Amino acid sequence: MHDPKGKDLTLVILAAGMGSRYGGLKQMDPVGPHGATIMDYSVYDALRAGFNKVVFVIRPDIEDDFKKQIGSRYADKVAVDYVFQRLEDIPSGAKVLTNRGKPWGTGQANLTADGAVNEPFAAINADDFYGSEAFKTLADYLLQNPEGDALRCAMVGYTLRSTLSEFGSVGRGVCQCDDDGYLKTIVEMQKIEKNGNAARSFETDGTTRDLTGDEIVSMNFWGFTPGIFEKLRSEFARFLEKHGCVEGSEFHLPAAINTLIRKGELKVKVLASTGTWVGVTYREDKPYVEAAVQKLVADGIYPKKLWAS
Image (cartoon, rainbow, N blue to C red; front, top):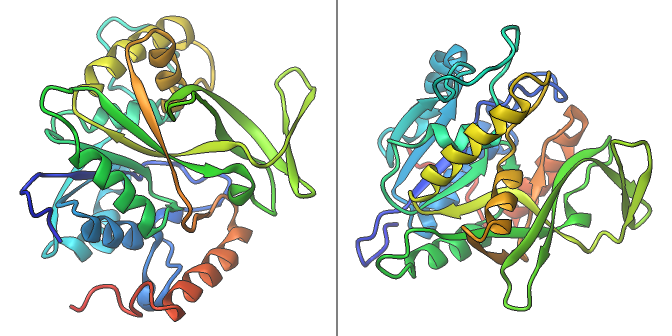
């Protein structure tokens, strides 16, 4: 379903992750009836919300399998494009480790879409199930974008408690908002685990930090306009100056957004989601995701077969 006003919206799906904790390419792993993947549900929800183009950010080494197993499903349903996240795609003159083995994280992955996106867009993880309500909320916000507002941004926020895994720690961007619902800060915490009905994070200095579980967190569901690319490119260059030779360093999108907010170069509206989020961090999470999807199918939120053909 396309927006009746004729405005274009693109969905950028970050599908280049290594999936190391999961033990495989979880982006291609079915979780629903008829082999439906989490990405299938994201694309289905996006089309219903008014998006009319999908850009997949993938690695070159999975291109053939990805296009055959995933991309081919949408060829006759929506405009599809592919861009590649490569380790070597860095600003000219940047000094980095010569033996680095993987690309530079979600900030670089979003930059990869520059050139393939010329309209307001959403950027999401391939392995998170965000729910139909979240796509509609973000699409409505992006379609309200006044002319000339080149940096109108948004983030769909979720309650921390509802995003934790039973099987290990997770990384989350913990958010603080101002009284008008705009993002003030977002702090990336790499090791958060359940602690009863609350949570706790393990800090890099070996200490722990108690969390209530009610905090709003980013699940990397962002709404941008193409003006964001220039901002991210500048932040990426600055990141590499400081961390390009640090083993394992990553240019995280939430950290870049946080810096731009602190510098007064960006405003991000936080759109609270009351819908269903589920995700696969560890292989043991998969049965819980399958059960959640099956319930949504049983409740009539999704058809048993997403695509008629």
